[in-house]
Image 1 (cartoon, rainbow, N blue to C red):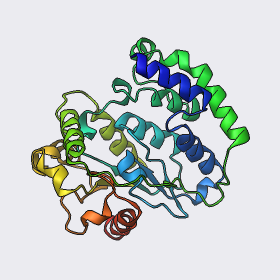
Image 2: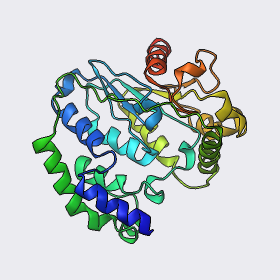
Image 3: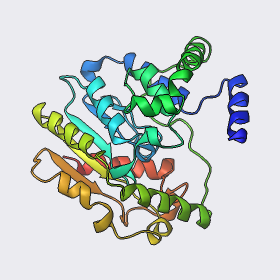
Image 4: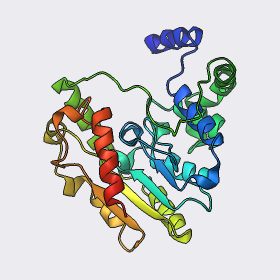
Length: 281
C-alpha cells in the first residue's frame, strides 16, 4: 500500500493518470465528428482497443479493462439513429469481469467524469475512495485538454502507440489464470450483454461479438474454448441480429502478430480488422 501511495504522488506531479489521455481523446475525437456519419461503434476491452483499426464511418470506444457494464453504457451514450453495427469484444475474462472490483477501479472515475457514466456500485466507489479522486481527476482532465490535446481530425479512437513485445512464459501463465478466474465468477455481469443485445435488436442494429485471438502458450494454461465461452453462446441464443466471430484458436494468426500472450500488435490488428469486416455481415 505504501508503494502504491508513493507512486500516486509521483504520478500526480508528472500529471500522469493511466488511460486519462486515451479516454479523453476518444470523447473529444468523437465530438469532432458528425455523428450522423458514424454507423459502427466498436466496444470492449484492450483486445479491440489495440485489435481493431477503425476508419471513417466507425469509432473505436474499446479501452483497457472495459467491462460489459461500461461497454453497455457507452453504447447507450453514443447510440444514434445512424448506428447500424455494433462490434463488441468478448474475451476469456469478460463473463465475470467487473472493473470497479479490480485494482484498476480508478478508471471508473474517468468514465464518470468524461462520459457521465455513474459508478456501477456507489458503495464500493466510496469504500475505495473513488469519489474523493473526482476533483483531482477533473483538474487533470481540464489541464490535458487545454495544454496537451492533440489534433484529432483524423482520429477514430484507434491505439496510437503499441507496447513492446513481452512473451515471458511466467507472465503469460499468470495473466491467463487471472482471466480464467474472472471467467468462472458467478455474478450478474452478463446481464449487461443481454441489455445491449435487446436494445440493439429494438434499434434494428446488428451486433458482431468478437472473440479475439490469443497465442498457443496462453491457451495451454486454461480449459478449452467450449468451456470458456459457453455463457456467451447461451446468452446469444434467440437473437437473429447477433453474429459471433471466434478467432480464439484461429490459424490466421502467427506468433509474430502478437505483442504478448493475448494482445495483437499493429500487424495483427490490421489482419484482425480485415477479417472482422469480411465476416461480420
